[in-house]
Length: 464
Image (cartoon, rainbow, N blue to C red):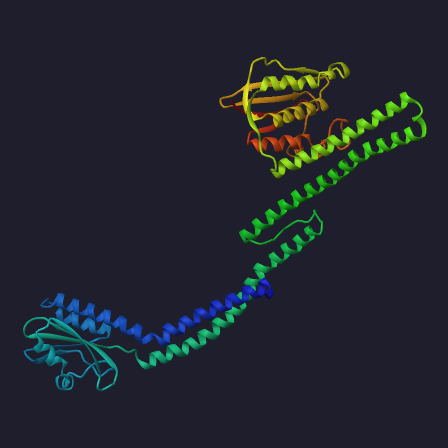
């Protein structure tokens, strides 16, 4: 069962209204329904503090003045009895004060306390005149002197009525303000999000030129816009690479297939009787088939490495010996294209890695340097021993790579020069294979280049 979707504006509005309702509910609960309970709690605390103050200042010179101030400031009634007779009373006929002249008859708690011998005691009684609950705190100052402090435990009725009436208006006002504020807040939050959503929809439809701009001061939304702008740039680059990938793959597949078809037709129509020409044409078909085979194998190998299907076969081997064997494979270039290799390391360098895959790394880097060799026709291989690793640098003095292109050279089929025709032996994914193998080994790799001065590719291997 699908859940119903609500607009963000409605959600924000609803939550703010519910929040306002909750606040008002608590306000009514505590200010009206629980007012008497809270009032009683406050008055009990006050009367105990007053009793402590009276006991502390008894017999002081300004004791009478203190009692008067307390009754005026705190709104309590105080009666003092000495030798069985009242000698001081602040009782008035206001609500909450007990009558002093008949209090011993009407309220026998006084006699009970005087005869009990207790130091202090509290009584909750009902005022016979006003029928309200009253708290009396009795205190013994000395053998003949007793103090009775009483205060109403119920707030005045008119105060409660005024408060309840006021809350009605407050409730109406809060509801109106909640509606208005929640509307504007929801609009302020949802409008930039709706704008981002519409822009994201354009991006999903293939518009990689769309820009995400919230025009808001909300930090999280601005961060989201920046992230989406970055994603848009990356997707634009990926889309361009995808088009280049399709163009290059189709070109690399189409060229040998066209050659195979053309030479097969030539054999069928022209050279099938001429053994020499037929063999040349068949050799061309075989070479183009091998080229297709290398391309497919490279793509499969890269896919397997990136998927992590095959685990590394780590072993100890001599790096110097490996480089020497790779350079022998390129020795024919000295006579064919007058390309020379400079490698002056002659000592054993034991490393720990997957020898087969490291051989592929070095082969691809040297092959890449040959493709972009400079006018000096030299490729340099430099070895440097570090504390825990061995650095291998493959250097050419070709045209170099701009800083804008450097981050993308490890991508499949990325070409620095869009008009550059790839060498016949190149599949266009050599550097991608290097990247995957080095990341499998968790070892550093990279490139340094300067336009017009050449390029240096480097990898590091763990010392044995």
